[in-house]
Length: 92
Image 1 (cartoon, rainbow, N blue to C red):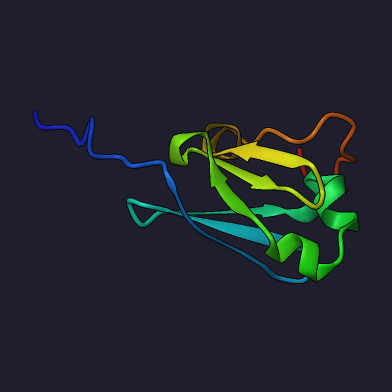
Image 2 (spheres, helix red, strand yellow):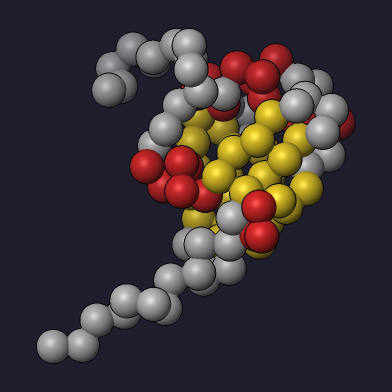
């Protein structure tokens, strides 16, 4: 049986924001969309500060210098919220 092990590329390609969520495109074409409510610093930041992001961690992280926020693709894929982030009604 053949597997796709080793073919996944979880490096950040692009980041964009919608009203209540943001999406990260990975180098292998996958997209991760998460609620902004999971990351209070990003939620509270104005659009121009959200738009000022940099790829970090060898391609596996995102850094927002104006907000002092750092996220990893590993954490996003796990569904990890920022410490103290509120849970949305109806969501685990």
